[in-house]
Image (tube, rainbow, N blue to C red; front, top):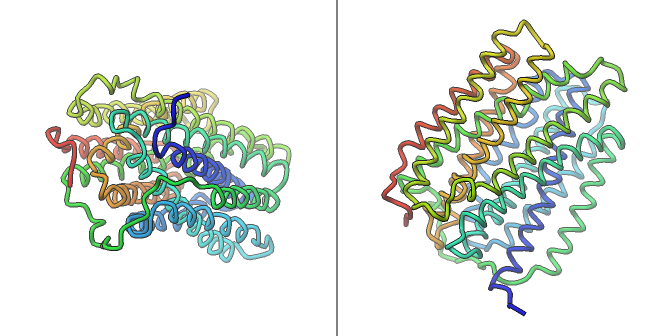
Length: 418
């Protein structure tokens, strides 16, 4: 029997933990969005619920890069899982008799803690790939982890909608906390060796990259994820809710299931294409310089989708069946092309980083990722409330174009930085 490669057991344990975390992360987002929309929150108020989650991501990714370098990836993963359990338990304490303002502030704080937890877990998992996976198949290993994570998160969207419709908000949140706590205990008891323990000399100032490519790739990431979250966080779910629900309890329940199903299918498709991206791009047969150039080309291809959807929204006089069908089809196409862009970025950041500072560069890069999500989250509520679908989708088009311009500044002659 062939022995497992060194570190593979640790890779499997980290990946399984990350899957469990992202299942609860996806379910929690859908639970919060649909539950508070049904309570009468406006699009802007709904966006506020996720603002601290994204702000926390910006700060956490910088801090987590240093924490992982200083104290090791294993501790970083434990902290992420444990904090998510505490955040879920706290959210279950929400009192429906509170005023809307108090509820918004409380949920923002809890979501902020969840955002910290998510990025601690992400930092450990993504950095582990660079350290544990063979260099020759790095793109494949990165795509496998990222793609499977997003497929699991998509199942979480569906799970969250289903739990809200069947168990209610509080019971659903407590059930997820219990399951994740069991997984944390199992990881604490059985985590195999293979991950680095950290180095005492790691300095916080090392987090800020001096690499031309890391900085421009991070800029491209800001606009790429901003473009997605402009429609993904608030606008499209609320539009679908307006189309699908008649305002009754039964109508709300059906709308929850249908919206959750669409969001789940979108994320699962996104994850599946991410996992297949190395084959789609023929990555094994192409030099790194070509893959760097492909990041710009795929971004321009992506920009065409929201541009077309913006035109359809402008031509429509309001929510209509044909427009809804065009949105569903168009956003699925957006998801597939977006997945290739995201997979390329996730590979390139590890390719540009050396093993001794991978947590630092990955932390900086995912700080940019969180900044993009924050920008998209804010614009999602604001643009939809101010100008409906046309303004929201038009802004997404501009954001993707900015991502393409940033990706065009990558130096194809440089594939690795210090």
